Image (cartoon, rainbow, N blue to C red; front, top):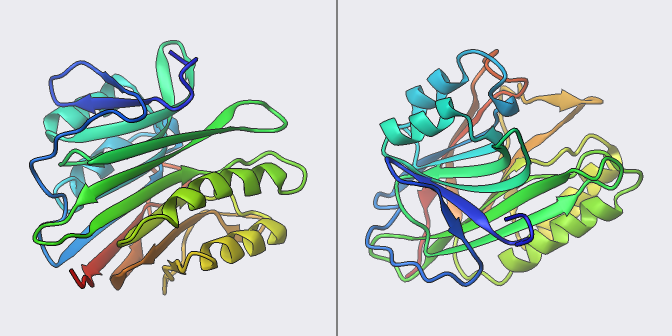
Length: 260
């Protein structure tokens, strides 16, 4: 399976896992965004190593339109959550160990109309990090919502691999004519990485979400988790304090700002 670099795994309630290959045809009968406002959760779930992480997901399952996870592992507990909540989960495995896949996962109620997966090997430890773009219809609009979920490369000397991973993602995002959300664990722990990240997202007109009570996970004094957006209005943004992961979940509410 891992010979197909660009595949995605899809999990649905009470269904077997599907392998989604590039250019797969998708029939979507239901828009993801059907109201003026919607909420997303962004969370590095720390491979579900800590107690109560599934309870956090259960609590916010019906309060969010999108749950963007990093370090999501296909454990029975997470797959059972997807089934109980009747969700759809698109997963880009970075690696597999003991038949458990790990990588970014985007969880919603609705199928995307397009999907793109990305993998970039860590230059030192050679274990990949993954990213996922999903595109969804918006009710009563000709525009579509692009959602990018990323776990950025971490262990590197310099920023060559970091820049390469970001370029792969942003080159696809800049082609999109419609609202965009780019979020995840960017591992921007050095000033060089942070400067590069802000420069690259600014070239495609993405704005950062700021948090008044900023309790994001930090390393070397810098936050790791971010949400960037364009073509939307920011309504509210908060961070959930929890011990269920080594990262705190970000909860962001957006308002549609559509012209068509």
